Length: 446
Ligand code: GLN
Image 1 (cartoon, rainbow, N blue to C red):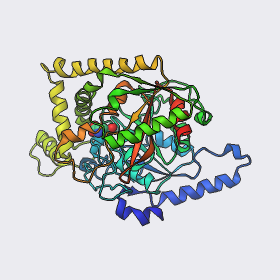
Image 2 (cartoon, rainbow, N blue to C red; image 1 turned 180 degrees about the vertical axis):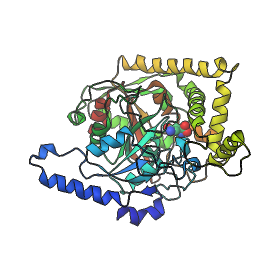
Image 3 (spheres, protein in one colour; image 1 turned 30 degrees about the horizontal axis):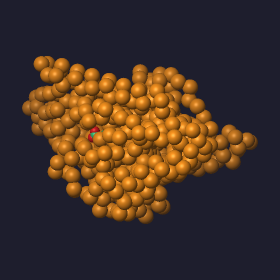
Image 4 (cartoon, helix red, strand yellow; image 1 turned 120 degrees about the vertical axis):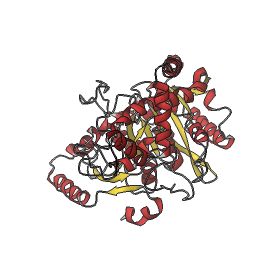
């Protein structure tokens, strides 16, 4: 009912699981009444969920917001979908996104423009804009998104919800349509920290079908929600609080930091000196990996095929010209160029070296501190259409989130205030696999 009442305005859903969702809900209700011990209740029993449209859902369309996958229905489900099923969640449908997760506003979707529920003239952020907007509009209790360079955290910040990017390898990527494989991670968007802990509990853990999955013991995340952060050592990176951050956003973030201090955390300023090279490094590595990953859309195996081709090569060209949008083509060209012989060392290899330096910046700070805090994004949500003409200003929006993906670390965005009626997100970054510490501090703050 809520989806029906609001989605003509918000436009978060690309597909609704209309037939199966009510049946699944009934089935779970039945199972619950038959339970003898309430302890046996699966962690997400009966909870309505929204799924970003780059997560493969057997029997439900999976378009990645792209024309090239129009009508594609995967013959299998992603590991996270199997885990949500086991946990009793009810998938309500597929949520809008920037095409192949390339973007920061969801305006790059080939299908529709999702709007920010706080103000319909503004973007919800991206690329998981459908996921953030749907949770903010109360259409679903949680949504899954994916984060390659900020795509869970930035839309969560813009829509005033909680969004967590887990440590690289904690959540299986099997069945997540690849954008940049060494950076992509699936994570939850929810309305509060407790829900994030529960959804993470359901989806985290080793999966033999993902070769980069980490074989670690998954802790009980609820155990971290004590409300106590006395003595926790929190660093504020000066590079995330300086030039380029909107002064009003900075003031809201400073207030949140003061509150963490009032709760007993020890706050000190640190430096992450290679931050200024993160964007340049990301915009070589991510397009390079994307150009390789997107080679599979050839008009043969998946989605659409262009008519009227005179031979095989012509069919590839026509299909890809018609099927991919502007931003995706731009990334494929940049990535292919960066990987081409003669340029590989100058661009791709150099970018990988910078990536190591960025990771070492974090390693050094985490020798002494438990968390790093700062803004999730330099501004609040911007107006629809405001940044579409200039890709570079759009890229600059991810300056606070991208370094974390390059380093493979976990980070959350939680709501911490407003500027002119639009939400601001506080980012908390943790050590690898220290999601519990992030949740502990977020819960205490919330
Ligand atoms: N906005 C960034 C990009 O376009 C990040 C996207 C993401 O995290 N998927 O690449």
